[in-house]
Length: 241
Image (cartoon, rainbow, N blue to C red; front, side, top):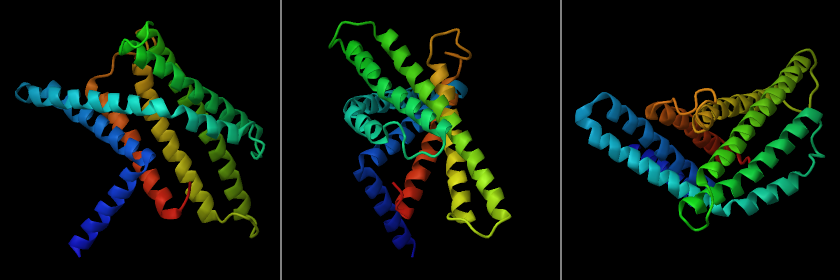
């Protein structure tokens, strides 16, 4: 029975790794996990500092791997943005425009990061720090917009639940509404953890920019990544896109 469970777990892991998005989330989790562990070891135990530095170096390489893979994300993002368009299918005006601005911030993030990467690699002549800062700012803006959108959707779901509690009719069951609310809460937690890191990577003087220790950056990223893996698992099991 244990062998069957292990086989099922390995099968799900292989299935996740076979998709680009799933593989990216696994790499992301490993990256931040290494940063969390490496930062803690290098900080607390001098005897384990070499191991900690090794894990931090591995985290840096995994992060670089993800940056290179994102060179191919522009077209997918553009396709998604075009399909969403002006959000004609959205019933709520606020959700619609938060989503449009979110898509715009995501779309602008990619070329800025590509230019920063190319400048770092000396493929082009540009100031890499300027472009890294700009890409991080767009990422932060996207996270803030995502949090605002999820909060708006949560408020709508709460009103629907209250309405259905006093009425037996309703196209969506309370169970489905609660599942949607749970997904939005997880999205908020994930975005808030990432936002903490995004601010850390902005230029000094912006809130806590540059002040978070390595292990805390790793912890925030690990929390966000584990939520992403959980969401992937739930979506795969329910058939959601």
